[in-house]
Length: 166
Ligand code: 4NP
Image (cartoon, rainbow, N blue to C red; front, side, top):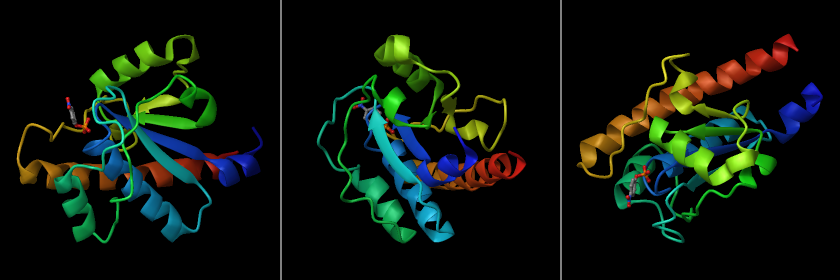
């Protein structure tokens, strides 16, 4: 792909299990940074388990996002489909168990050049997980926000370096 297309048409998918706690935050946080940077990139999110299809993000994800000036209330949970590997340039999993589920759903379309753990942008090669806040209290959602926020800053810096060195 020509580097100019890469800048113009970069499409990123954030993936967790339920698409109600972590990946909706990742979508909102990265889209907000992209808009502020004036980049024409698009971000979406999906989940691997489909248990919450059609639902809004978890109320605590919405609350924490709102506290940072980000509105994620209009997102709707959807399950990852194998065709997402055709539609997106980069697919970020929130955790290792999510990568395994992605491989299972995408089968022959799974592309390891497109898939990575989001936190590898911040901690290269360390394969760290964004912890699942689903079973805990509000504090976990703040922790998740801070981690994803830092990872998205790193992601933007890393991608811009790739573009500059092409
Ligand atoms: P998420 O959290 O993957 O960050 O959206 C979860 C939400 C729901 C479930 C698991 C994780 N669940 O099993 O219903």
